[in-house]
Image (cartoon, rainbow, N blue to C red; front, top):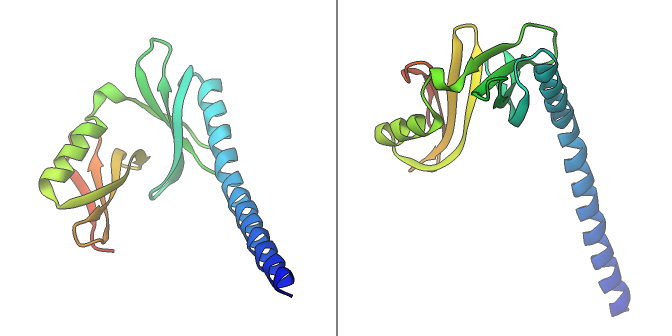
Length: 159
């Protein structure tokens, strides 16, 4: 009888673990496909020739940010509209402040416990840095900083 109980428990754990892995994999597929399409479009339209990284940014206008290099080998970001046709906007990374400068400004201004991500995005008013971090009080915070000059656009604190 013990062997049957042990078998049922082990089988159940393995089954639910497998189901969890399958659900997670299926949930990630749309994001991966959107990033692949955005990367291909950025290359096709001549904004980038080499891709280093891409990620979704959900600001006022959802888009996929594709980072890479242009024809001259300069680091560049292309903002591909997500889910709709539209013009790709791009910016040379040398034209604004770096992610390291953004992080140092955030750390000077606020009590930061853990940085979750630093993403470059765009909206109607131009490119911005989105910084998500956990504060000393273990609450989630978002700060949006202007890419050109590093001024703070928006703060969403203590979520």
